[in-house]
Length: 182
Image 1: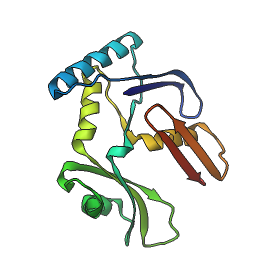
Image 2: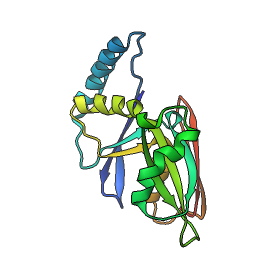
Image 3: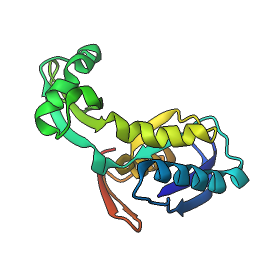
Image 4: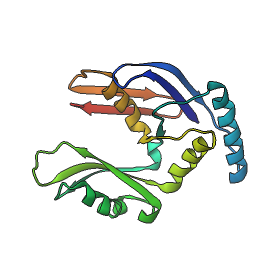
């Protein structure tokens, strides 16, 4: 399915002006499925005339590997050099077929870094991005769906309680996010 949410305003103050979910057609033949999904996305998006400064794509986290990793250094350049291989033992896919990224976590250490690392097969990313690019939308931010609600809460609320629980209930699954001091 594709879920569309349009926010109008700024990062500090915005209104949700559209929220809809649309099932994408499925077919046994990959080429036929791709054609049917392209047509469905065109049918959904053409009347909306979507455009914007920032287009965020939230990819399904169930296709990704998420791990907390600790490194004995803090230089981001070095993280990128070894991240895929550090995730290798946790992934059921080959490192050369994966896109990996990280988010630094708070750490008391002056020399070590704690990261939330993610690895996802490249084809899981390129398929939905290609579908959106074909209809003229160029995503500028790629995220995982499990972080979408958390990011919206962090950007949209000036002060959250120290321990915040966010729940995203939809037809496919329920996502529970716990925020500890943001």
